[in-house]
Image 1 (cartoon, rainbow, N blue to C red):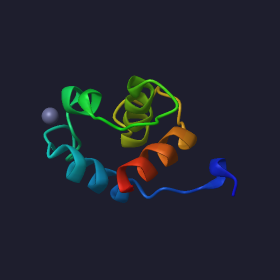
Image 2: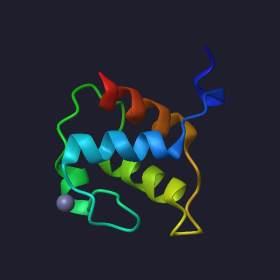
Image 3: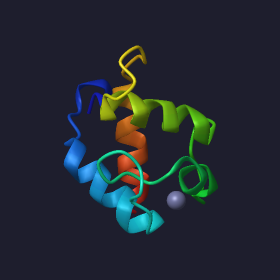
Length: 81
Ligand SMILES: [Zn+2]
């Protein structure tokens, strides 16, 4: 499977983050910066902050951030494990 072609529904990602963090205070129901950065997700390939930037990009409230679907897919699957 080509990871870069995988489509992750934003609603599904948001739901997994909400369930994992128990925090939905930011924007339209996303975990806050502190909770996100405190997540314990063993085996992530990059710094947690890189995933945060990817999440901000898909949220769309920071228009100048580059989309990173590979990190989003990795995060999504870690949260579902
Ligand atoms: Zn929080």
